[in-house]
Amino acid sequence: MRKAGAVIIGSMIILLFGVGWAVKPVMVMAQSIDELNDQLVTKRDALQEAKKRISRFKEEIQIKKQEARTLKDQIEIIDDGITQISLSLDETVAEIETTALEIKQVDAEIKARQAEINHQKEVLGEYIRTIYDLSQESSVTVFLKYTTFSEAMSEASTVQELRERSHLVLQDIKQLKEKLEQEQKDLRNFKETLEKLSRRQKQQQSALVTSRQSKENILELTKNEEGKFADLLNEAKNAQQAANAEIKKIDAEIRERLRAQGLDNLPTVGTMDWPIEAIFGISCEFQCADYPYEYLIGPHSAMDIPSYLGTPIKAPADGYVGRVYNANGPGYSYIMLVHGGNVSTVYGHVSGFAVSEGQMVSRGSVIGYTGGAPGANGAGLSTGPHLHFEVRVNNTPINPRLYLP
View 1 (cartoon, rainbow, N blue to C red):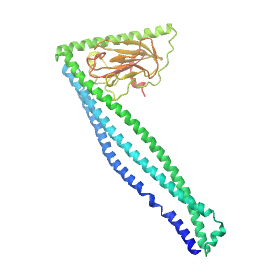
View 2 (view 1 turned 45 degrees about the vertical axis):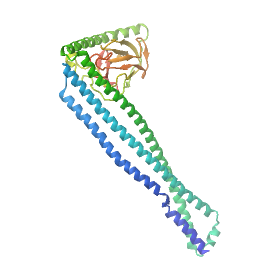
View 3 (view 1 turned 180 degrees about the vertical axis):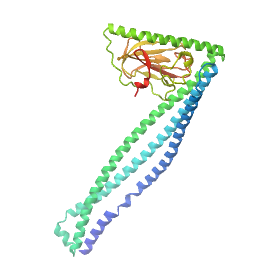
View 4 (view 1 turned 180 degrees about the horizontal axis):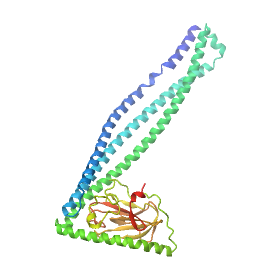
């Protein structure tokens, strides 16, 4: 009887303290995660360096503050734009590589977490089976197995320890599952980020091609002659001034016409959505100091958002299409939306249109397509593909940042 009791106690002690047999696979995965962590540090450093190169380049551009007075100036500005797009593309590639590694890392962590959960479930199963076996014996049977009271109490103490350990393992499993759910959520987020970055990479590659084509267009239009470039500037200046005068005139006329038709209760804009994604940031803010044509047409009245040619422009708020002007050539094309609260928005350098005058549009609907590549349809006065996004209140241009998130 003494020997049988000792065997039972011994097996329970092994169960309590000798459960390291299933840990090894988890440790192997952990080593793999450590390796991925080291690789991630390297990739993140490369990403930060790409960001620093962009920052240094922008500082250099701000210092020299170029004006497009000559063909040489125009070409230099286009070349700077090409360099900036190339740097942005390098940054995107670095982000893609970093995000791809983060996906591998989280995937490895998920596998390690699942292995750990399975291990804890096996341990818990052993605890439960042992407790169940012991619970089938009566108290008298337990005491009869041993020759001393202390041996019987030792078994009872071990059973209590098993119950406490089972409770702790259950808590561990619950926490592990919560961590697993968070890691699975992180994995989904990283995969979505990777898809967005891949789309951005294609857009930036397209913009790079367009910008290089812009340089060729300018040289083709001017035949590399300063006199012809001066004529081109003068034509673009006249087109821009005509557009500004037209926008100022028709804003009041449209609102009066809408009032007469009982349609003057247009929805207020609130916070606007971005009309396009700023994949290269902002090249020229409202009244920016480095606007290359300020000497020609005055302070910059909008925000310039670089983009690839043909990017869908989305209405940032509900509105009424007040003007759709197609230059049918390299002149300045634009769309004007009228909103409630005496707010209107203008979208310049448009290469294509998806709406007609007199149409109501809802937030997020496509109204046209970006242009701005010198020499291309609708570009007007420009040094590269972008969207001219203008916000006007009471017919006066204001900083779009006041309405954007």
